[in-house]
Length: 254
Image 1: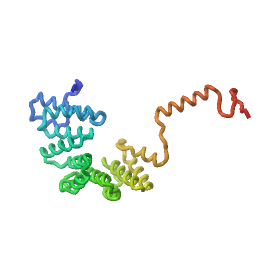
Image 2: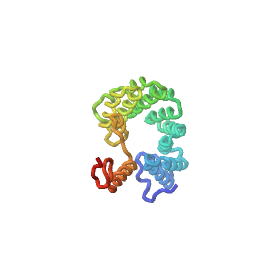
Image 3: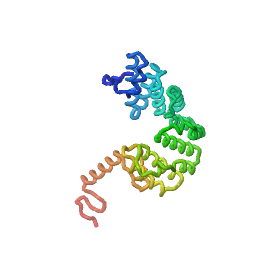
Image 4: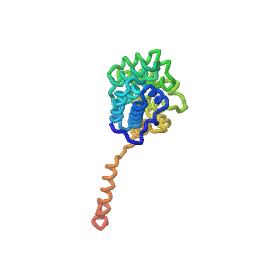
């Protein structure tokens, strides 16, 4: 796959660059450039990001960072079985637990929520940092919902992190998940309160909490085409000088 000339591979994280030092320099540069493209495209163009990840994987399948990038790209394309295999491979190479929540979410993706719940109770969770533990809680709650256990999902999300007034990188998503679970359980008033709290914490627009809140408040959004149509109709009426109850001169008929 073609790579823009401005991508040199030097943009890659220094830890990844260090991993690639085990490869011949030319090969390392090629892999690095493909990994840069994965990182650059994975949010906006996951399909092409996946393509670059496959190239990197073909070139350097024994590098943990490559397997991890391939896992993220597959995950972004909802190829959960493939993502799980790549995450497992990366974990075997590094021995770290940081991919554990993603692996559990892949289990959900391939229809095994019970396995995800088993993983949520595994010793590996204690090795995660706070962000990882919150992510694991979100996955566990999602698994409960997959199994139709709404009340259990709500309880799973109730935690010191949810109750905290401080805003952390995970706060908006945690509050959003809690609000969504409450709404699914028919607890609309509480859901509205937590969607509002999610909006307060969502400084980078990572959720659609503001839209969900507006919907609960009965606000209807008009898309751009509807707005143009409405403006066009209004202009047409103005040009004709005719409106209901008036003749062409604009004088009341009555």
